[in-house]
Image: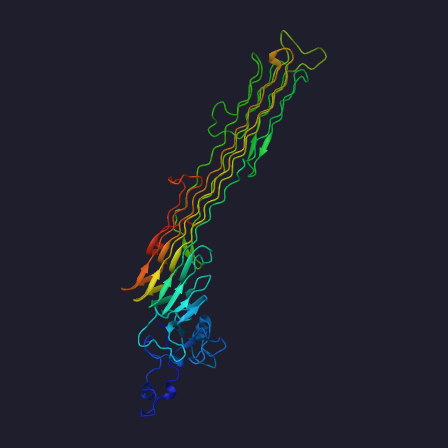
Length: 525
């Protein structure tokens, strides 16, 4: 309970009771403290609290006859005093009615809502609380309706009585969750005869798909020089594909054309994982036998589907932060084709014409490989629906007659799909022969196709909780109602069949109370 004021009593001490004494408490010696009674039963007095009504005016004094209009202004007056040296009352009396505002209530300031204050009423509870019939409704169109923050004094507790706190759907700061009440670190509150109601969370957005067109394809290899154009014809220069992530695929050099022996082609890059045989290797140059073509480059590795979100997320000052699905990885780049072997010019049965160079033809360079496809983006998390969030070191007690209800958590978003890898392309032609087969240059190999980008994981389903806490003290007394609604479903993995759980995220949790500090959460992505 808050710190209650006894202002005004001392000036009346020593009053002798007679027929003119309008209040027995003021005529005792010494008098009883004016504000020591249970506010749920005692008469509401100007000395004991600040009064607020829909029909009030924030320029008024906040007395019973001149109430203020907004809850937050009333809370400020109750916490710091009305001025002119008046001590803080640390109590707000609120009429039944609707207040579309977000409020911050310091620990130690009480909010007594649901008062009867129409014309002719005396701001009483008629002896017992009739909150379900005329509560103070706190229901802003956006944001978190009620925050209890640390007060100026340690270990003070706020009473929240006779109110209905209703969060709008998807109204928290993340634009997806709905949270009705947050206790900041170290804050303390009691909820009595009140309803704390979360709205529904919003479904998470699907992760963005990678481009529907293929990634960049390779480049056609260069052709080799013809025979009899040089004594040592250099092999065709390599071609390079530079992908947008900076990774390169390079076709191999063509083999040189020589006089008696052709040079070998160079293998394409990058080397295939495990260096498998007959992939991307350069062809052999002519000697006893004609040259051979370069080998086709290895295909880039397809990325696997990424994982769906599994962590329960984190609680913080803005409420709950969920977890997106993992983004898909990029596919591997295709290996460049090997360069073709070079030819030889001289032979016992033939030679290039007199007066011309005597070298054989050069080999063509390998074509470069295609780039790996981009991965899809992870599905977004579904919004949570949490009636009360209690942060580190705070304390919340839910007493009889109260309802604390979660709504529906939003479904997690599906993961985005990956991009197809770029195509590998042909190597360059070898140079033409002159009369004998051994003098020709050989063709470069095809570049390998780029791997497909990975499909992304689904986003976490939104929780539905009566209370979510982290490092907080929570007490729920008998006859208090604390219940969840329906949790959101975890998002599917990108490009996954409905019946498949590949890449699917965890469903949200539906519990009356969930302690996040008992988990080992991964950080949100």
